[in-house]
Amino acid sequence: METIKIIKEQLKDNKIILYMKGSPLHPSCGFSAQAIQALNSCGICYAYIDILKFPKIRKYLPKYSNWPTFPQLWVNKELIGGCDIILEMLHNGELLKILKK
Image 1 (cartoon, rainbow, N blue to C red):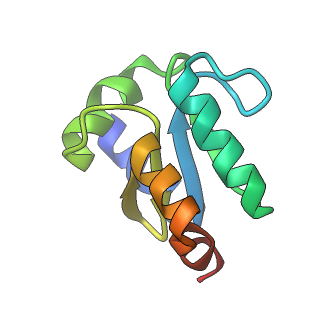
Image 2: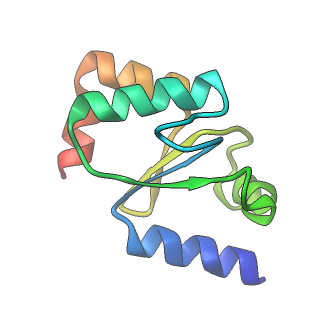
């Protein structure tokens, strides 16, 4: 399937990638905005994909990741989780450790 191949290439090409609604400057949902704030507070560079502009990725990524919602944070081709997990990891110090690996 072409879309899964694209997702795999995005994950391979980007150490840290956030699949989100909107962009870091203009998030289109509160959960994406919170995830962006958490990542920005860590001072780490990351890539993002606006799933609203790529409906096939929006459709197939939840099947590939076995995670139904967005945003989705991936580090080193591994799904970290969504907004709640990102925020929890930020508050307990785990997020920065994972991002710096």
